[in-house]
Image 1: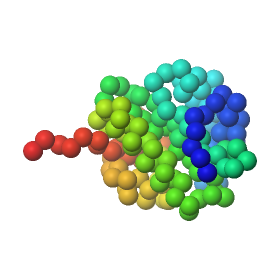
Image 2: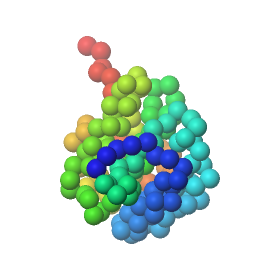
Image 3: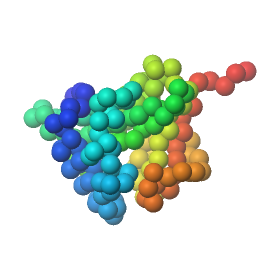
Image 4: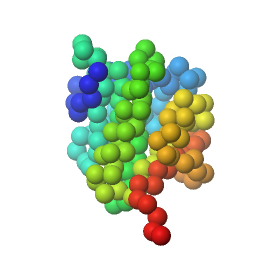
Length: 158
């Protein structure tokens, strides 16, 4: 599988993947809420300071997605990280996380943050292994977001 820049024509496949995974975990897709960034707001991934990549198989089918937006000078937000259930367990989630962390570090960010739901236990293990720390969530993107994870990218002085 290869990781490549997402294109506007990939959006239907990305939406399909994200919505299918939401439903797999018992959530209702939110095209006008947390997933609006895959609809009318998708331009943010293509026109602003962002990273938007897809994991595709040998037939160019979208099997995963990684979407990041810069929140401020010091912070990147990992908005989308999904891997199709058919290819999970092959290290693809870890690969996406590593790409996100590398990208954030190279952009001289101080931290990488993300919001998720506690039901996504496999994802939580992935974040923990990557060094993320669970913190209280102050301003959730959606009613389904009940956990926030932070990865500090700079070593504390001392």
